[in-house]
Length: 344
Image (cartoon, rainbow, N blue to C red; front, side):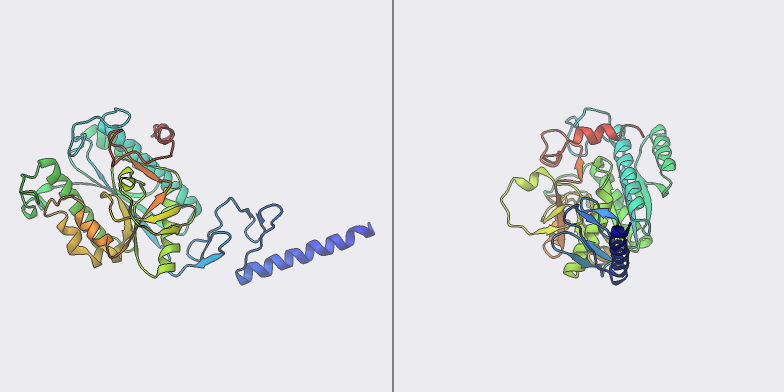
């Protein structure tokens, strides 16, 4: 029994030391077991403390000066139109509503994961829908009601915007009705972001599937990198194939759990802040008034000034045709993600 006293004393002192480190904000790592006693976690778990510090070994921690308070998901849906600009079948060859339902379900699952790990952040979902059938809207509402997140469904009225849309595009061609509805939906989403949101906004189309960790990774990465560079950001969750068609110089950043690289092009699914929306309001709205070539050109102009980042590997993928350079993100088992979001 006498031989155990030094061990008991050692354990007592160790506990006191760990408590002092926690109070002072330091972390301790047991290199033999990869255990972090100050957080009661292993190194392969998420060590970030939302709103306070971002930890990534062996680089230590980043003090968070840009704390995220809330996130609004603005989901643009239309189950009536299969493809905006082409008639090819999508990956998995399902009807359009199936992509809408699974996309929404994947976002909700990702929000639930984020809420579990980031309980201090407020989440809400706003859907702007155009001409989806009554049955499809019922299914959308059923998915939302199971989510337990604050949510709203808004029916888009194109007449609010049609007079502000140039009927000829930048190539001097007639703008299609589908494109007019798309531009109107984007304009409505921007207005909602400007009038109803005060922190982060995730603008997303209804044909993107998300990993469970997508929302959490974007929020923690936004806090980390915005705090490091002292600027607001734009984050695109998809690692698009077209980003690999040219050899461009870039910057690589270390996010919460992913690597992120600077990109100069995206489609119209991205996360950013209310500050960016206000700062570039006229430029963003111009995308809803004239069909540019490419359509997202006003966004790309913003990316020349602000940091737009895309994850490697991808956190979401665009369910277009299998051969589309705007679709299937490389090196991930997306069939698994598709199957996991069937039960909505």
